[in-house]
Length: 448
Image (cartoon, rainbow, N blue to C red; front, side):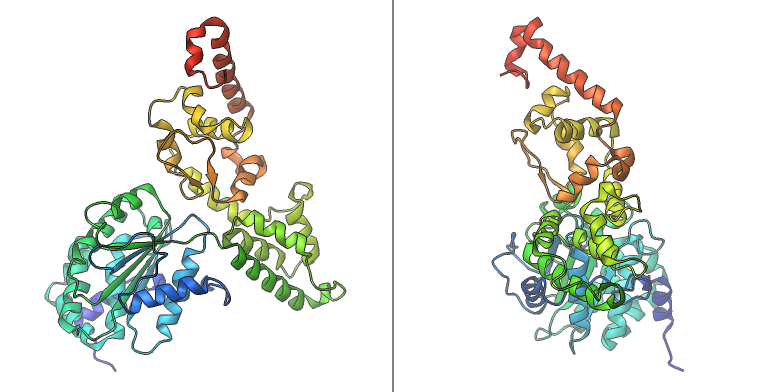
């Protein structure tokens, strides 16, 4: 029997093994389609290997490039990119890496205090020298795994890496996926603060890839004094052509595998016009496309019938084809405070098509309230810094479909009778200014 040191046993018990990139709980893990995100994955691979940075990195560190923030809206395929990078690292000899894939409200995968012990355990398994150094630290002080995040990072990762590193070695890579899903905003900030404070040594052969939605508090940490000069960033932008490749390949697979019900359906299926419409609906992000394929690829139904439901959902009296997508949007909206005001704002924009620059005056909001309300929607909406813009930029066209369908949006349907009446009241009040007090017309959003 292999003789495992006491320190390593303690570390093993403290690790959240279900947060690994290859854990059974996460099966099947999301991965990029073989013909998509090729350039982005190549860029990330080069970043893990050397100092070279592609021009598309939107922020370049003035010092070290050892921290990379990969960010993008909900459903953009960030976890699939992180998973694909992990898979490539695991298949390459001599590449030491560790990962932690967060999951919101999960007992272990949602616990930020388990992250550094989990990462340390993986590095110890892959590198004998690190295993000795880490195990010795834990054996000397078994309470390390329960101490502050900064101490955990220092004792379980940074100090052991300094002991065994050589300048000619390929950097070790640590991948933290879904930081915004870690339980507790203060824990998320402390993780970033700990990483920033520990990575000021330009000779440390270590890379941190941090993947998250562009939540305001996370963005502010990266632009703050702790991380601004140490990180580079990459926005996982829309990929319409990649979505098209994914849909075409998946439709071909579905046609082939559903041979009993699809044998008489000629190829190409579906038509190019339908594929174009689905690509537009996706807004260039994979969550919509993958939800469509998952719904159609059900062996208990004919794919042609399921596609008809997708294209004409209002006419179908069956389960929602976008249940997973709706859960995501509901979760995002649930985290926004002051729901009645939020619904009034969304109703004014979506139902009454009132310019965003007029919303503050119309709904009599205090200065800064509008941006504060919309900050929590940055995963689905681009929120500019100024109040002078006229329209919101929606990351997902499907989010608007969600808001306009009461069966899908439920309690977040912005055009209920009550909300509708409230907004009409504000509109009538604004219009009345034109007749009762002309001096107010100057600031009246509804009077030219």
